[in-house]
Length: 421
Image (cartoon, rainbow, N blue to C red; front, side, top):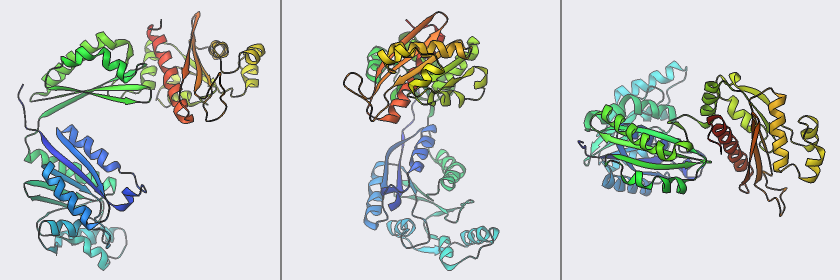
């Protein structure tokens, strides 16, 4: 297949508030995603404070690595906003009033019934070597430079202002200047298998991928995403090539695949239940309703979600779900016997096809030698059978709740799909 030279970019986020953790830098993450979509490779993302030497060093380093340098932040009118004067210093040019920019700032304040102050007028003073890029949503203009063999764009740190400049100006300008490859992504979503086991199963398949298709493993809570990225000249060919590879992968790991791209596990569950014309109910103890929350966050869940109970205390496991008192006293709430009765009885109580249950020690307290924190039992009942699983999770309460939810939903997925042993 034809090849196109890789175009590289670096993102610099400027501001003490980012280093102090007062504001999370979501801008750089978003910019990376947008550049990736058009085939520009981000080689580095860095954060620098409001410090002259640090910012100038970031400029010097960036132009050695990348052809495109995108900056956010440091564009306010106050003395601690250094980006604009330092860009002028770096490119050895003056800062002068741009009448068009002044008019835009004046209009911005007039529309809001506010007076244009001398401090605000400074927003319209820009380095003479830059191209003024209007900011329709704020007072700090964008500044585009083509210097030292690179293109540079300075944007406000306010996310919605930055995004508008990226979409309206930066992305089209990059496409205009650089010959970019077509790029096609598809993500395979897997659950119920760890990254290393998945990689071991796919070892031969991965080694035989065509050169223009790259694979990335993206693990998350209880799940692993496999991102296939194809580069080339013709989009239709790229899509066909990726689909061919996915068919080969499905022969190896098909039972762990629940969806593709942005589909969540709870969305996949809903799709399967609708296709099978089945309904579900949950009895949640240690998860406190979190699984039901995930399931009902999907539009149309009323077609398959019957309801649920959160019998947190043993009294209500017995009173509402009819878990036998002897089971609770002799085996305990966190036991296989208890979740079996919870799953079977919630199914019957809510007239569901599938009943699922969770009971465990979420932590950080409550564990003991035989049942340490992170011990969880889950169960799924349907037709005339019930399956169970014991989980040994972490010391972190919220993490245990989330991991249990993934395990319960995966148990339901495999039961609906008929893949449960």
